[in-house]
Image 1 (cartoon, one colour):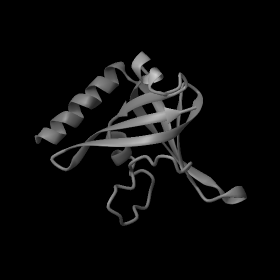
Image 2 (cartoon, helix red, strand yellow):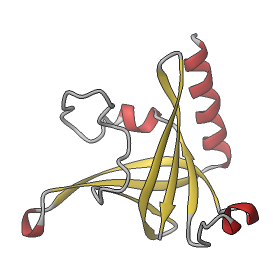
Image 3 (cartoon, one colour):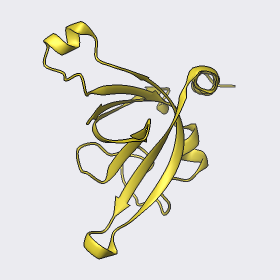
Length: 129
């Protein structure tokens, strides 16, 4: 097992034990032709710290840690376009992706994929709303 695979396995185990379920939804199209694709993720969440609030974050912001495992296993979002960034990574700031957690829809403001040996082993998200 490679170091990247070990990192992903450890994160998956931790999220399975202590995480929460969330749904990542990617929207396609506009108006009456809009559709979407969902994938259920296991996530760990936290609110901003006191220092982050002083620095300008809102109490409504949320920080999420998730694994690439569910995204890759679900082949999210479907047909994979060619590009330098994996299509399964959540998209920030475009409105195309939303995260539903604790029955609340939140806007993805920042996506920070963490890599080991050029493999995404963890995904950090900053949410608004």
